[in-house]
Structure formats: structure tokens, C-alpha cells
Length: 317
Image (cartoon, rainbow, N blue to C red):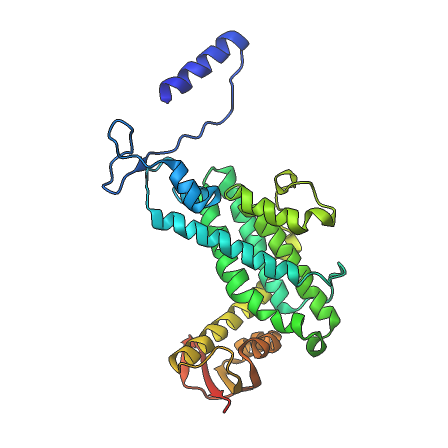
């Protein structure tokens, strides 16, 4: 490939007095299970058609995007399967989100701290993903977007806003609108960030909802996401991160007690310093609604979940 590259550049300069491109990206080899370069002459190749028919193009691209530029990459079918799981998860999470946007009137509503938390996280993901793509470090972008989608968006934010969406009377219609506006912004930007890696599923989701909202005909024609400066909010990040620690702690306790995550809590006791307490109070209603706690009190607790942060859970009968 280096000779082809040299030959093409020389011919372009000789005949047209210009170079054919400004940047060239050369990746490594695909390796077989024994760590040997896949080659037709060695008979150790895998027919891409078999993988495509089994897992789809997006899953294969997701696997390929995990390697650093220039590095060799071993072929592991389980990692392609991981890509397939991400495709399915993206479809299901998008379906859930879009279903809960059907009655949204487009208003931004009144943002809650937890909305500011995820938008601040999204700001960072857009910023770092853009920087990494510009350096052709696509594996880092893939990892950043994957983590944000699976953990920040699906595992946490979707759970945290369910009460506001399902029961708007508890927090008010403006709060529900803010949750919907944030869901819209997060999903659209996730699709845009993932589009270069998984072009098919992202555009299919886009066609199902966003196109009719006055956007471009395809996600691949839309502008690349912009890290909106006012989304960055350090206090909201601290409050949201603390809420996630508490949620994780409660989930672990329920799991250890072998009770359903939907089991109601009579009282959630939190032990922390005053600074942390003020942060928790910003997201207290979100925590209550998500862990199904009737009350939250501050006092002595026994189960340590982080430095200077302990909890106790009193399950309902």
C-alpha cells in the first residue's frame, strides 16, 4: 500500500501539479485467533458476507472501530456480537425515547439539575469526540460515545426521568417538558456522534422521528454536533454524579437482599457532609422517584458507598 500511495502521489504531481489528498489513513491488519495476519494465501480468512448476514454491517463496523489507528486487530466474533447488542440497545432506547416524546410540544420547559447534569456530560462527549475524530483517533470516539450511551443515558438518565414523564403531576408540566427536551437533545446528538461508526441504524432511527421534525433528509446530511458552552455545569455534574452513586448503592443493596428493584423503600437514610448534602438536595426528588423511596432523611448510616457517603435502606413491608 505504501508503493501505491507513493505512486499515486507522484503521478498526480507530474500530471496535475497537485496532490490527490491532504491526509492518508492506513490501518493495521486483521489477525486470526492465533495472532497471524489474515491472508487468502494462508487460508485463514473469514468471509465478511457470513459475518454481515449474521450480525449486520453496523455490528462489524462497531468492532472495527475499536482498534487504534495503525494497530493490528484480532478478529473476535464475541466483539462483533457486542456491536450487535449495541445496535439493538440503540434501537430499543430510541424507541422508548421517541414514544415518550409524542406529546411534547417543543417547549424547553424548566430544567432540573439532573437535566443540566447529562447535558454537561454531553458537552464533554461532543468536545472530546470531535477532537479525536480530527486526529483520526476514532477508537477513542467510539469508546466515549459507547460509554455515554450505555451508562450515562440508558442506565441512569432514562431511569431518573421516568417519574417526571409518567407522573407530571408530581413535578409539574414544565419539568416534564424539560425532561422531554433533554431526551430529544441527547438522542439526536447520540445518533449524530455514532453515525460515522454505525451509519445504518442511526439513520433508520433518524428517519423514524427526526426527519419529520424539520431536520435534514438524512442524518448524514446534518451538521456535526456542537458542544454548547452553556451546557457545561460543574455543580450539576457533581450533584448528578452523587445521585448516581446513591442509585448504584441502593440497587446493590436490593440485589443483595434479593428483592426487586421496583420494591418500595420506606426510608432512605443518607450520611454525608454539609457540602454533599446541599448537592444531594438539588437532585433529591429524582433520587426518591427512581429508587421508590417514600422519604429521605439525613443522619447516621452504616453502608459506605463512597468517601464521606453512607446510606441505609428500610424496605417497605
